[in-house]
Length: 312
Image (cartoon, rainbow, N blue to C red; front, top):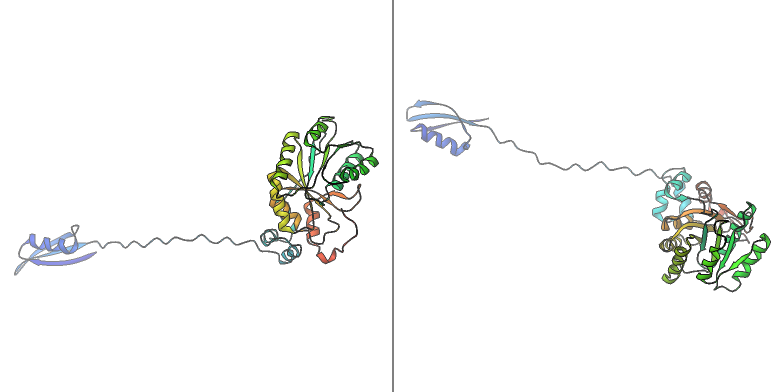
């Protein structure tokens, strides 16, 4: 509280001086007569200084510690920096992969149809033969449809496998014949459709596959070699996801020394990892690719994967 005294000839003049100095809310504490007039004692409460509000920044959230050994292993396999940083937050790479990626079986129920698509030379025809062999060994007789009307010898290559399996190969080089072939025997066994090699970045190729899948109700599985460039694989998968691809089959895991393309493609196209080509054998060269199996390969140094003469 501020207390001041004011002298004036009259009380009114003293009060006026007090209010002029202390403000209109000044408290008049008392007056007394003095030789030349009156003396007024007045007081006022000091204005409270309001401290400026300083915004408090939220405490930074500490990034999970990275396991440098895991990060180095992923870098050796060519994973992009952002992806390997996300996967290297701890020593249990399989757990991180299971969190970041999806791992699913292919939709191969009795009434299902699977369009196997991918760039030329990715291993689509051999993958179809391996899937057909697996189903045949399980007691089913899949419908195998060769829809590759572009590559010379494509039908003959697949026919060599189906003859060994005792399965009739249906040649359907045009979308209309594919639809007719699918209509026959629907609901009895899965249908596997081997397609022509396509350019994932060609809009016409993507539209053709998307239209065929929409008309037939078939699921689309993208086949990519495990050893291709990781960024190229991610961009290819993203493009094919626009055409409706939902699953990924990685071929040539037995040959590839660096397999960063597999998780990169799965992330790029939001594809579920389904199968991995592990060798040239039709009966044993394809296996479901799990988070544990993928982690084991990614933690294996590329130098420990000598090249082989076979292909998956």
